Amino acid sequence: MAATLRGVSDSSTLDLALRLWPEARDRGRVDDPNALDELLATQGRPGAPGYDCGLQRTFACFAPDVEAGLTLSTGERTTSDAEARFIAHVLVTRTLLAAGLHIDDRVTGAMGATYGLTWTVIAGRHDRSPLALATTLWLVSLDPLSDSDRPLPISWDAACFDDPERWDPEYRLFSHYDVRERAIDWAVYVSADPTRREGCSIWTIVEPLLRLDEDNRVQLALAAYAQAADGPTEGVGAAAMLERGRIAAMLQGHISLNARR
Image 1 (tube, rainbow, N blue to C red):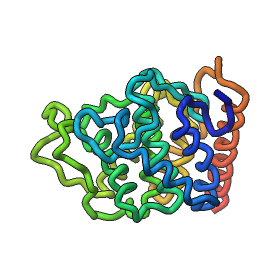
Image 2 (image 1 turned 180 degrees about the vertical axis):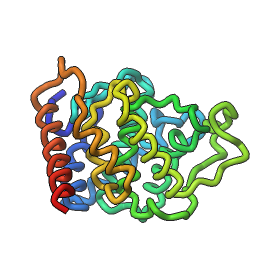
Image 3 (image 1 turned 90 degrees about the vertical axis):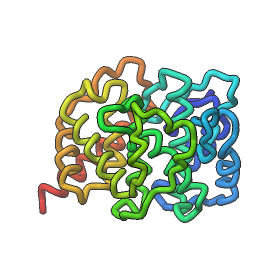
């Protein structure tokens, strides 16, 4: 495995998504659109999160018979097979959205599956890690319909959503706006206490939030993150620290710009 500013994994699918990510993020497109087909081809395959309970819209970055793991570009390492599979799916979806495929039903279905597994649970019933939830903020920030009341395409018939302790079977209609509100509320909530985001660098949360800065709650959260310590850096490599520094500079630029207004 080769460490780069794009992150580390033992998945060729995820490595492709991470390689395409910087140009998709910064330019809104990729030079080789055909490479996106390679990512789309992994949808609904064995090893994808939720595959065993009926989800068909998630991306498989790891074979079902291997122990999945990855390291984000900001240095955090996943702590379980399930977490790695879920985050890898989100990172593939993120690249596809950023590259302009937000009009593709396969990509909106992947986004809906992500939200179904996270932000649609009953309040207080989250069992995803802060790192997993933080990565989904990118989908919210890249969604051109994030302020829309259009219903999200979530496959509620999948057995994944049959647990009444986590999902309300009488409340199945969620819009893009509903999810954005829940995600932003979480980002603000964890900004107030570092124990609420244990295992997740503040910079993983900050970068997508910078794209949602028209919301007053986001402004408050960004101000809090600008003053917060990121926690221990033992074991974090230089490449990851450079990536954190890149995002820190973006945040400071944002804070300085707002101060001059």
